[in-house]
Image 1 (cartoon, rainbow, N blue to C red):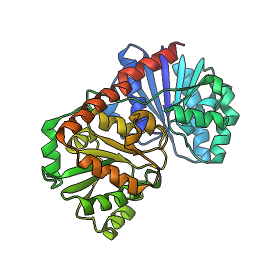
Image 2: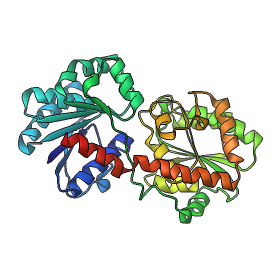
Image 3: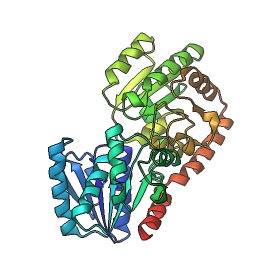
Image 4: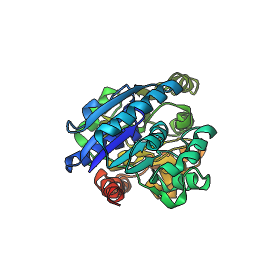
Length: 362
């Protein structure tokens, strides 16, 4: 098969990484694979297999630039002659759909990666161009339901395909625990809570800080490590000072070896106001961590246990659950570890790849 993947950009993110992982695996299986990205920046070169052809459309998010990118993408279709075009995320999906009006695309799959990919205009564009795709996918059953109910995707050709991770990378590794804890002056006896992700409003890390402040007043030797960058970083640093927890919270910035940070931690917390899937939850679980998350997007489908879920913005309930986990004995934590590692295997890249192969063959 000749498979052409189209995605907005290749910066560090869940949609970008899963697209690369699938492209790599398809190439290893002997398929001819081309990966096209709209925006010029490529932060993930080292993750892409050498057998995958990579092409940049050198676009930016302006109307004129996207128009030029669409024309260039049409030329790539003519030259590559794909059997399947698999587009990912809003701009890529729309460019692929419009391109199909002018060029031959035997089969077109359009994948959204969230239950919220923009404002009303974007969603209207999805609805108006829906007839141009063969299959629509999203990363959770909840997201698919949301898209179908709002008539952005038609029900008859919309399916859920979860994101996947490499469980050979995200796995328990005791050797890195002390090394990464000492890097941030975290003592062996400290109970370390961890957040990994972008520091943006929709991630609502503010709720996590409020919850952690309560935890720190009721339990000694607790720390919080925040891994990621974003426009809210300064506000969050100021909030931690206002709450009087700046000495207990470390902002580690963006890190590419996040599996080492999972292994340094004792509990992972995600407080997003909305999520597409929540790939970081799977990564943390695969490393054996207890996880807590807001009931947003596909998070509940990953965790599958209401005891580890909270409502969006409910920092008081979150603090109670954080305290409960921090007070568990080693036997209870070991049971959670075993369960979460097994649960995470449902979202292994091999499992998800099988699902995609079934979709492609169909």
